[in-house]
Length: 179
Image (cartoon, rainbow, N blue to C red; front, top):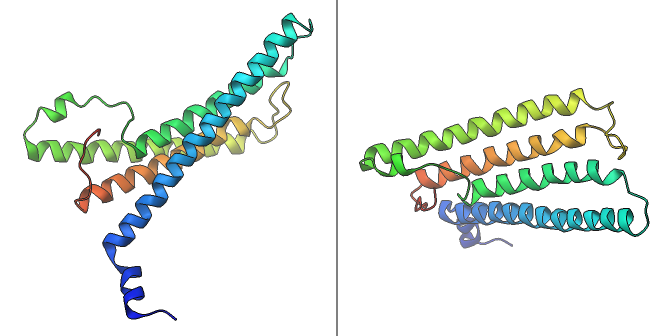
């Protein structure tokens, strides 16, 4: 049975923000773990390529297409995680050289550009997924939509993480370091 204290803790905004932040951090870390595992797999299949070519004298032809597919997933998952951790590429010397009110405004503008970019990436990626359902990737026998799926996933995560950064900054819980 829930007590009043349990109910109060469930609806307390600082605790809710902390819980959401931990969930988003976990999603970001999962992106990095998946990207890391895919990177190890990428290295392994290139090892198989070299072994097949020079030892077996039989080059596996599927490695090139599989590696291109893996690189897209690794890159997109890493990019989304970079938005969450504010480690993405940014040129901030102009913004940081401005007086404080302008600096804060430009931080929000930069976040809104990131949200817009994520939305555009997800939208256009979805169009590519739908347009390429029937086409197959040569040598791998997967739909070409698998190449565009990371754009949808990454775009959605970029939007989610950028909006979370905006909300965190608005609530005063963000130090803006690294952003």
